[in-house]
Image (tube, rainbow, N blue to C red; front, side, top):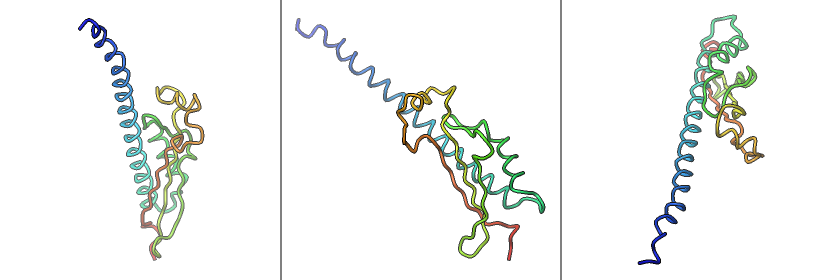
Length: 143
């Protein structure tokens, strides 16, 4: 019994850092998944506005309006310029469509997890940029 006197402290010293590591990983995954859903919704919203735009309204106006509206969304990622949103005329199964791609780089300031990018841990990783693509039938280009 005398040999096991420090066992509780050793178990505590081993398990508490693992517990906090798992807790931080769960928070990071939740923030990443939240951004994934957010930027998919941004792409859908931009695509919807692009396909129902008024005649004579350009895609640049649609991009600018949506960039100004959504530039601050996101926990780990954010839109840094209007060029993060691209709108292209495409054809899907013979129907005119619009494809919107939203690319948001990881925040380099203000987010705890952005320190991974500064430390070089994300070099060459796909996690440095969140990308969402959405395609929708273009109601302005009816046959």
